[in-house]
Amino acid sequence: MKLSILNLTKTEIGKKELPAQFHEEIRADLVKKAVVAIESNLRQPYGADPMAGKRASAELSRRRHKYRGSYSLGISRVPRKILSRRGTRMNWVGAFAPGTVKGRRAHPPKVEKIWTKKLNTKERRKAIRSAISATVIKQLVEKRGHKVPENYPFIIDSKIEELSKTKEVIDALTKLGLTQELERSSIKKVRPGIGTMRGRRYRKKIGPLVVVSDTCKLTKSAKNIPGVEIVKVDKLNARHLAPGISIGRLTIFTENAINRMEKEQLFMNIQKIKTPKVKKVKETKKVTKKSKPTVKKEQVSKVEQKTVVKEEKITPKEEVIKPEEK
Figure 1 (cartoon, one colour):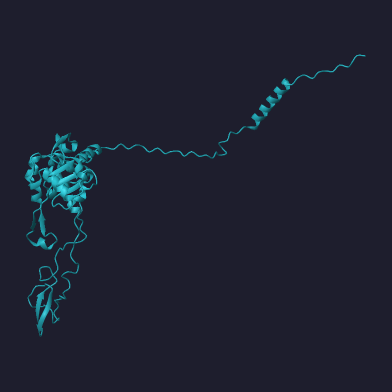
Figure 2 (tube, one colour; figure 1 turned 60 degrees about the vertical axis):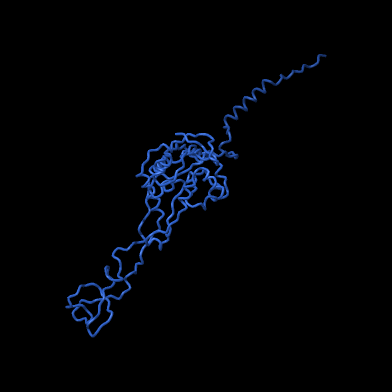
């Protein structure tokens, strides 16, 4: 599948073939599993006070001779506290037990509970690939609620990563045909219900996702635009691509991001061949005594004998001096 590459003024520069990550089968069940695992790992453990509902002095005796006991009164064995009394007649009110006013809970939430969930690496990678392939299908993106431009999907030029001002980023996105999407994601409403008191007062729409190759100026300049999110390619996960477990988020990839994805084979199951480690032998300058060539005494004596014999042969003969004749 080929996509057109657009510059910041919405003019087509060229076309590019998408890598294998965009041709994965869409598996909504795997995406859901991956998103639930990410969100469960982000949860903060919470629990009730272990002494909650147990601070009342609710003692009620069942013995016969206790004047404050409940013997022969025909009442249940619920622990009670005394509010007032008249002689031996007590004004009891149930306390401490579950089901009573301001009593303890039967099974309160505990801090020891483990919220984290694990996921296999191949399942996680396949979930990311299927979520990536869903972003290219225009029908799924429109079904999610995004205001999609006519020429979607497309690849944007890598010059957008160099924009350092928020105004420049908004102008570039409006020229690409994302004005309605930016208006939709800027809406902020008050959440109904008790969630307003628990740190989630407002509800916001999720806007477009821009995937860049590496850390750049765009990560800071587009930070203040409501709904817009900037993510590096190697940091992509299923929650970025399918927030709320609904696949098909409006995503725009830069040219360098796709090149890096193709070059490094990100989110692909590639077997790495392990090369055996060879230990290097360190060369020592010092020569040990054992390494010196040793000559036996017998050999030395034989060699000396040969040299002596040869010298005797080579020496000239002594001349015999004859006596002078008279």
